Structures are given as structure tokens and as C-alpha cells.
Image (cartoon, rainbow over all chains, first blue to last red; front, side, top):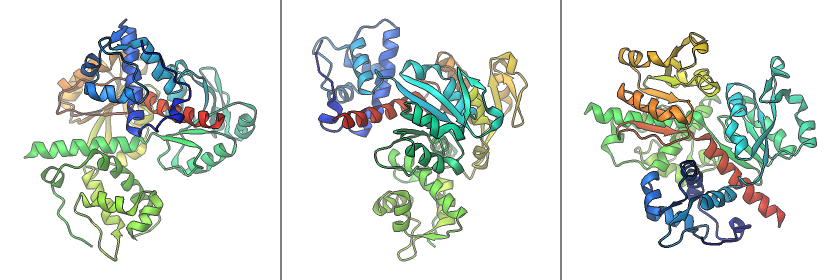
Length: 224
Length: 224
């Protein structure tokens, strides 16, 4: 097994392309599945066949982090899984709050796997007084008016924003003012935040439009 | 205004890169906002400032579809909005079903805007008998056993899959066997479907991991 010190590499070494970062969680998922199947070792060719990515792409991607593979042995699955987990920051616990306790917010709050990956949901907030105190997996829904004080007392890094577009910008500002470092944005607008605040967007409408585009192209082909 | 026949262009002309298609829904969103603000005309420079994309990128992207802009006039907003809508297939109505009436499935079923964009939800399915008949915006939840007959009778193109990973592969196969042409996949696995079936993935865990990666890099920078 190749021994590699990964402490702080992501900052120190050359910057990693967005495309590679986008693919890492998929590697992590497949490696997790291999572990569940009891597979300890895999060649880039075998992994390539499973993931439908070329073996050279896999080698190239993983070389960004110094490799991990060994000629003639392949990859040590649990080791690679753990290392990619570290790269993704999954070896640490991050505290997350959810703003907006509608269906989508509740879906996130109920998703057990996030906690397994180190994302601990420590609060759920809404403006609807009817929801006040209702418990979602141990978190009583709090009112938005309690948010600033909550953030000043608690150590929270991530806020998931599942509120209507109309209130998202204002809430994002409030979050940033109160020290939130990363926003997982489900609202259908681009947030205007300081550069040091991370925004990861999930625009469901845009995803559906891409599906619609591809479906339309396929339908046009079929009509010919 | 530039007059342009867009009938079937997407198939006839050179294939459009995935990156451009990925950006189109964002153009559509911004143009929709401009219309709401009563703005009829915009230059690529003004649009560039709003969208934080270079003006040359905008011109290049829209040139894929023959342009739409006119020197010295800029873009006609309602016209461009409509044309991009056509490209995305939003001028047609598509019928969609939702498989899995958990929080996420209910969030999708309750999202009014999809219908405005031409995605009509015609059925919601689950395996949980407790949910049977419960109405979500006029759609009584149906049992999975009713699905094959439903798909044979009704004209459905799209299925949103919001079920656990463990049952997603089997359900996808059933959907394809019964004529579904596009799957909006929220399950955390890659579906193995025939080439002519479109799959659009929304992997929330992977999105959260990308956020975690960026947050971790930022935290490492801060520690220095």
C-alpha cells in the first residue's frame, strides 16, 4: 500500500479541477459499495468497468491526490475509501441547520445518511408558527426569530436553505452575518454572498429542464 | 428582431455541448426574472453583469442556436425567453409520475411551478398502504401494484424516482418495460437503462460532499 501524507495537500498542492472534485463523491459511493460487498482490492480496469469511466480517467483523477494505487496490485478499497473521505472532509463532523421545514426541508432533516457522513443536523427553522416545536428526528422546529441567538451560541458551519425564492436572499444575508460559512442552496436563485462563503446550489427546476431538453431532442429524432 | 426558424434545429445542427445545455436553464431563469421586472430588451453586457458570466460567453452560448441578438439592439427578452423555452421543450406538456411519496416525493408533487413549465404530475405511487388514496394536489397516492396498468393506459413520459437505493434498480426496470422515456433519478445509484431512456440524476449526497470538500479546503486555509 502506498503511504501518503494527505494533511493539508488540497491547499498546498496545485488546485484540483472542478471536474475532478465533481467526480470524487461518485468514487466514494462506488468504493463504499465495494466495501459492503466485502471487496478489499480492485484494479483500475475493474473499477472502470463498474463505473463506466475509462481506466485512464480513474488513474488520472486519483493521481491528483498522489495516486493511492500500486502497479500490479490495484487499489486497496478501504484505504482509498478512507482517503477520499478525508479529502471530502467526511472524517470531520460538521454541524448543519435547515432553514425551511417544508417537505424538502423535512426530507433533508430525515435523511439518516447525512449524519453517518458527518453532517449533524443541530437545528431546523421555519417562520410558520404552526410548526413550532414539532420534532424531526429529535430536533424541535424553531422559529426564525430564534436564529441569530442560536447561531451565536452554537457552532454551526452549514445551513441548508429550503425556503421560497422570495425570502432566500434576505435569509442568506442573515446567515452570513451570523457566521455561517457554507450554504446548501435549494432556492431558485443565485445567492450574492461574500467570497469566503461557500454556496452549493441544487436547482431542481434546472435539472428538470435539462431532462426536458434531452427528452425533446429524443422525441424529435423519433418523429423523423 | 432576428427571425429564425428553430424547428428541429437541435437535431439537425451540430450537437450542442453539455456545458451549454447545462447553462440554458439559468439563462431561462434570468430572462424570466427580467420579464417579471418589465424589461423588454437587454444587451449582452447588461445580461453579463447580472448573471456574472462574461458577455462573450453569453454571445457564444446563444450563437449555438443561431444567435437571437442584433448588433446595437441587444436581445429581445420575451422573444429570447420563448425561444430558449422551446429549445428546452417547455412549450410542450409532459406527463410525469412520482414514484415514492416520502418527503422528497411530496415536495416534488407539491411544487406548483413544475406544472407552469409544462410538467403535469398525473400520478404519485408508493408501496406503503397507509398512504393509499391520500391526495397531493389532486393526485390520490396509488399503490405500486397499480403502476403497470396505469402506464399502459395513460400517456406518461417522465418518472421521478424518489425511492430508497435498494429498490430503485428494480423499479427503473419496471418503468422502462412500461414505456417510460425519461427518469428523474433521486436514488443514490447509477441506473442501468437502455440507451434511449434519458436519466437525469439528482444526487443530494454528492452535492453535500462537494460542499464539504470546499468547506474543508477553506477551513484548512484559515488554520494557516
